[in-house]
Length: 325
Image (cartoon, rainbow, N blue to C red; front, side, top):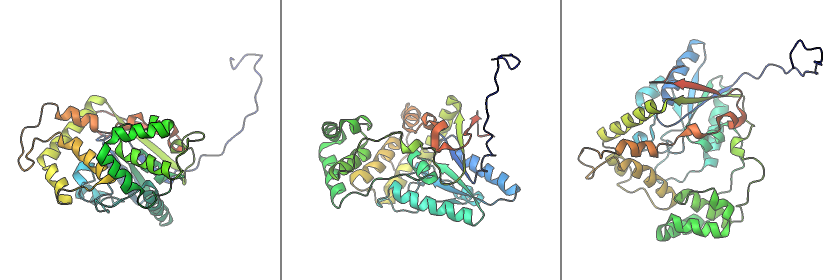
């Protein structure tokens, strides 16, 4: 209705108080979009205002030592410009869960706030970002021997066969898991055996509106061609640094067995496609190396940003040839 219409009737309005000032700032976006550069620039701005920011990583692979180049861990110079926590603190053969990460992230964030510092949560991995910002009802750890048994089945039969088994036992769960996602398949079968795998009720907790602290979520985006160019540059850097030697040297060329080892081998395999063996010598990469890397890079533009964590007024920063405000 027109505001001047005589038929307009005033409706009662509820006035809300000012929204809570964000205590936590969270940055997320696709691989190579420039999250670290934005976090450092943001930290400089906050310091100019008298604040003391610290970055808390929300990446499922950056927690492991020995995969720094593979996972895009901030460089020593970047870490000197902005302190980063929860990176490179676990050996490659350690088993680590989202629940364990959540406990550490909550302790870091709560401790920083108690000390009057500003947490900058930088992700990363969707589940880990959500685990850092909110409270998730995470599943219990596997029963003793369960992971080893299903990991052995995985090695013997392959991921597609396990997906078929899961489809027969819990079709709803199989529909949500890619047939080649070994880690999630093993975990689903563990939970099924333990009687802990049930169809979800209501909306996914991953996109719940409940947060532990008032949070401003910032989604970073970039024009696709520019983003692809940045991914290509990262692949070339990996080649120059002999990534394969670094990955193999982290544990004498062994990444372990089971779902955890499969997880690392999958990440390494996507990068190894960019290398022509033997790895001790650099050779011209195959013509489609950059296209393969772009396909392997997680595209977090697909995340439902407007619902993530209920963060107030999620902002999308438009980026062109490089990070900018």
